[in-house]
Length: 242
Length: 49
Length: 218
Image 1 (cartoon, rainbow over the protein chains, first blue to last red):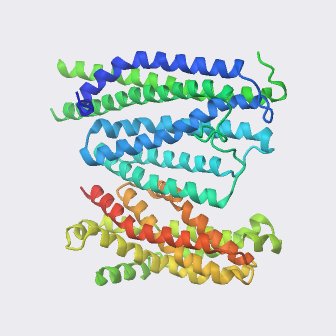
Image 2 (cartoon, chains in turn blue, yellow, cyan):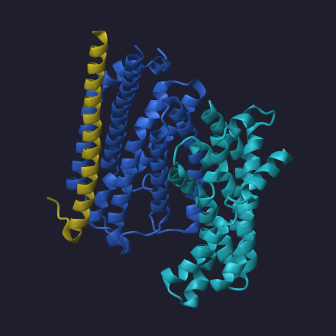
Image 3 (cartoon, rainbow over the protein chains, first blue to last red):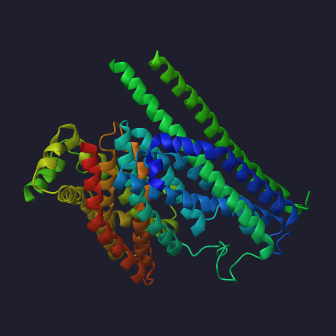
């Protein structure tokens, strides 16, 4: 059974809504487990004190902010190439989720940075890049809402996502060039030295897992809503014609 | 409660705001889903008549 | 092709075509900056490259919605789509016309405005060079944004929202060249990156914008 079977909206609705309850429960479990472990049972960092606990929200949300956009990019490409409506609607559905993840990453980043760096906002390359990403998300969502014809909207937003991705990547490097930055190195690097210490690592991975499943569940849920909205407008138009 | 010490406000506000956003997002998505599902049902029923 | 270019240039420069508005906006902005940040010449000298770049960028942004909307409204775009000229070429020509009537004048006026902001001596040449290299890119990116929003009523604000994030890399490197030039620092890296972005954008975006315009014309 190929994945493309679920390009059919009815099949997609059927499968996604069968998966949702289990997915939601699993996501909630992982999130609760990871956050409780991290919040109550992990130590303080010798430099950052108890603020290190913010990592369990900041890192997963930042990861999902980026991966959300990547998912939208892939879905947009699928729409442009194979014209599966479910794909286009999945991209539309994912955008607000990714945008909220970006906001959470920005807020937790700013709050975490305040005692460390002394100000509520610094033009650190990573934070700045996330702010730019947030603007890309907003533009994408605004374009969906500005265009009346749904297929045209899908086309235009897919192109925006494509071109936007290139410029988002360029911006990342430009911003790095522009300001060398205060942000610490990668938290999950494969390089042992940059890696966050193991005591933090396990609950972090668990919360990341929770966030990933939450993202998936929300996108499935919201895509279902978009599919139904399309169906409603088709029915209304049909009703008008008869 | 772990000893958050001087960073208590920092950590709690970060957690509080994040959870607020997450819960808000989930609630909004779910309520919208439910509303649209009902609306579709209404539309399909009125057309079947 | 030349005919198309000439037509666009003529349309932009005739009365009511909006030519010169971008320049006036640029001037007004530069006038407002000291009111906003205070008349301290040391401060102004420091921020001059950035302000001039921002001013040019915003002035460019302002004139974008005229770029395609007028032709869209009177059906000229549909005609152009059916012509033997490929859409990418049409787009590229429109972007060129936009640059010639908006970007290029801004580049020429910028040094004069630099005088008002106490731009350091070494900065003039690099300001001009960076703007000359960067403004065509701004026109091209703007053309892409205009193609996206061409069918949307009162899409000017949305156009700005879409285009401004796309302007970030060009602004960063362009302003960096201007700033380092003014301070006498080594600027090969940002210059090369600016050139790279400009070349890439001008070579590839016409295809994206052409595709988008065809989507809108369907």
